[in-house]
Length: 173
Image 1: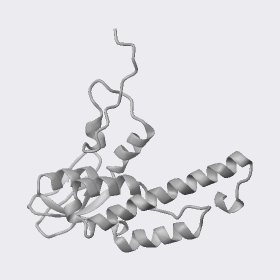
Image 2: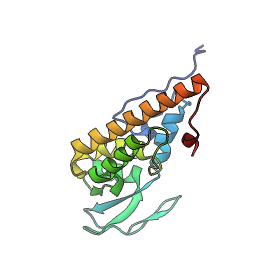
Image 3: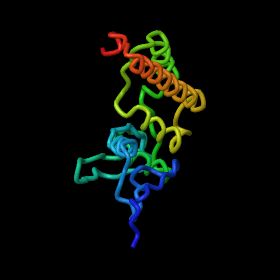
């Protein structure tokens, strides 16, 4: 009898839905966020024609070549993997947007700048699976990593304030 707790097998090349094996029933909070991010609507440019598709959660389409349509990230990733569409990256995944956020993050050492919901999860998945559709992919990737590192540093610095019993009031807002 196996008394060990199920182990979550993580492979960065796999989508969150595919990561849960039949043996595993436990997801970490990070994996749940990654999975939930796949419901975010993303704009695609289909390369095929198809009428509306009715799913349990919503209806998507109709799909026509060169006519943009919004679909959930999981569907965009699948269609991109089959070369059925071109993913139009969100405006948040541009060098200009991330550079601006990074500048603001560096100016204020106590507080975080607002980012779109699931920003890091969506950017990771789009950069990995649809990198050819993202202009300046390498620069965007570098900036996303730099933003994550900036936030990690800021978090650790604020944790030091907690350990010392001092926490800057502006960090609460």
